[in-house]
Image (cartoon, rainbow, N blue to C red; front, side, top):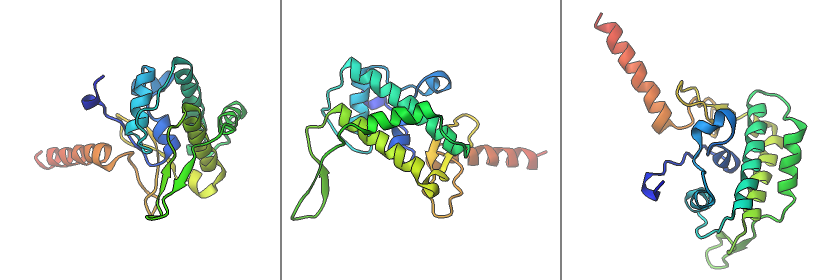
Length: 190
């Protein structure tokens, strides 16, 4: 897949952005990470914008294990259920690795991620975000599943009222509004 054809979906929370790149079982239809290079491209184009992170095959496979655990925990949170013990164990194991290091620019007072970064540090960051999401009652109540009939991705509802229905207003929301408009138009012409 070429860079210009990528259609990454970012759903409002780092761990969910990573988790919604595809996966096992039902998630396979969303798969965008087919090889280590794809994961490197996601790191570059994703929320952290970290270019040039080399990913080997073993790191790629470990990333798949973490992604699966995040998905399962997020599904449990979305259903207001307790996550399965084995998935929490995976998150805890990845979170135990040292996270990304950050530095503060004394002139601008902005934080940046210290480079070079390791894949293990990135995966630790994703796992820590997932643990933070699961541990925060307000945040975990904001995990939603897109209501679009052709989607179903999980997303983090960061809207003020907490009533967002679609993973993306510009994609699934627009499609739903277009379907509703066509239905109204068809029923008014009968």
